[in-house]
Image 1 (tube, rainbow, N blue to C red):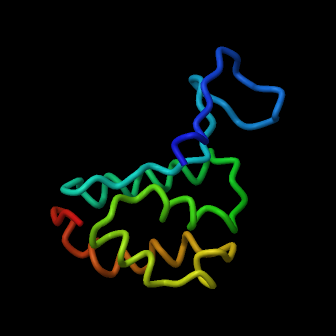
Image 2 (cartoon, one colour):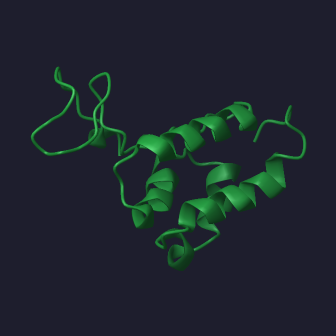
Length: 108
């Protein structure tokens, strides 16, 4: 999904996608192994405010940005039916919060 980030010198493009600082906000922030879960969670919350992706595509976009590992496996285990619904991203957050939010110093 990295190709979804489009550079531009203008604040809005002819395609109508939201742009700030030269990027569209289709690709969600990718989790990096060892990253603080709370920091990544904040990045996701902020991304939700700016992305132009339809809600039904946000969970899938997040899954595709994740590197192979335990976080991606937890997300993938939700299945296509959940990941393609409007509340799919919220279901991901619920699942990961249960696993990683309790101890904010814990890295996913």
